[in-house]
Length: 159
Length: 185
Ligand SMILES: [Zn+2]
Image 1 (tube, rainbow over the protein chains, first blue to last red):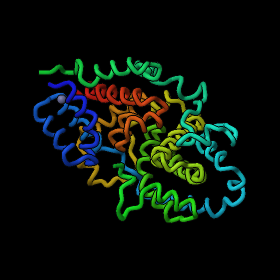
Image 2: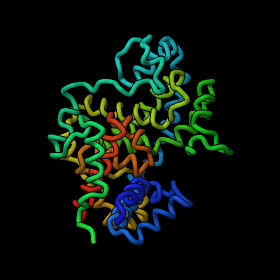
Image 3: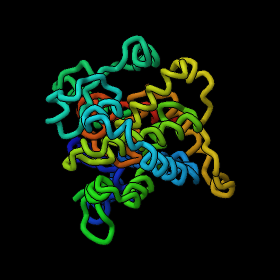
């Protein structure tokens, strides 16, 4: 097994199973699978997961479209009365002033809003399932962990 | 090239956003049809409830479209929408007072309505089991696996949606995949 190659292949597997990647990229992934049992197992799992994506309710799109149309014909004053930035802040649930430089300059309004304390996230990963929270780790630590996960001591062992 | 930016008969997301801003409702409808499925799966992954997820999707689109003037075309509309969706879903969970612990206890395998019975029958037991196991993953791992496999998002985009760095999103994904393989063995 070729560690560097496996890493590249595993990054690309989701795009192959979904058909988003085709041609040369897909061919090189598929070629590797013939000789690598670990990557093949991962491919099978990804394919199984993709094939069982939750079904989307058939009427959802129509429901949303009519809600949007209703909204656009009736919202005349309250929403138009606000600046675009304030509306964006509301949309993202952040309480910042409408002239915040962060809102003006960022590519996307702002992802870095605070998650309300005491709510959802205190019970996140660590407590819930004994998994480590990866957010506090340095890039180096993440890279190390990744090496281990992607191609290191793989479950089931290699041949 | 990003799928969104391809040339051809299908207008790109940024083109649709531009049209939507100037009052073209049809452009907004196209955006809904293009992205409601991904938004629904994100919402479902967080709320674990079909009704709540549908409400979240509707609210997310309304809020995104109301804020369309502030959306920068150089970012992907989809990532922006899914971030709003995830935030709405978290808000919905808080509002309903439904704590994660409770949600986990009564979360069976999620089934949405309108499943074609024939198709459902064909779906293998293995698939159902893989999805059930996915429910057991911690939230960020579950979201990372779903966003990468179901929606084809990059780790950078996933990081934005799950409020983590790109590196953390990548580790969450591979950790989740490895865990699933162990659970399914
Ligand atoms: Zn390999």
